[in-house]
Length: 69
Figure 1 (cartoon, rainbow, N blue to C red):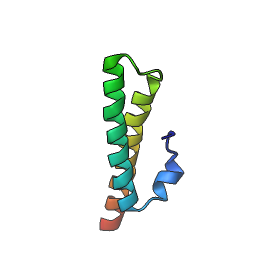
Figure 2: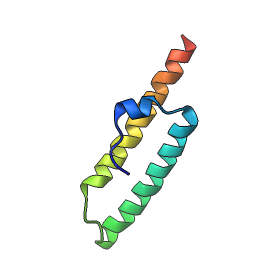
Figure 3: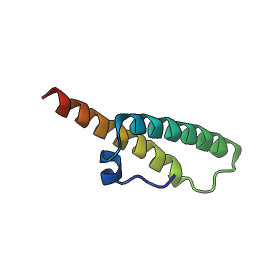
Figure 4: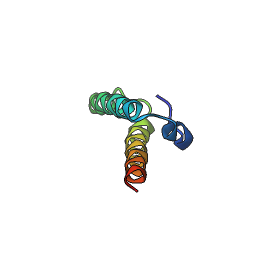
């Protein structure tokens, strides 16, 4: 999965965001195993996946905050 852009994330629904987070967590899990076994070629992808998860969670929190106002 390529790095997600902020505009793409903001366009997602809550269900799409939760699906994207689940997919990224699975990918991160697999990447950690690849790193442990020495098979990971693109080590920067771990950081990208972690930051993508945080980016999605931040936008989701902003949307929830905007609903309560």
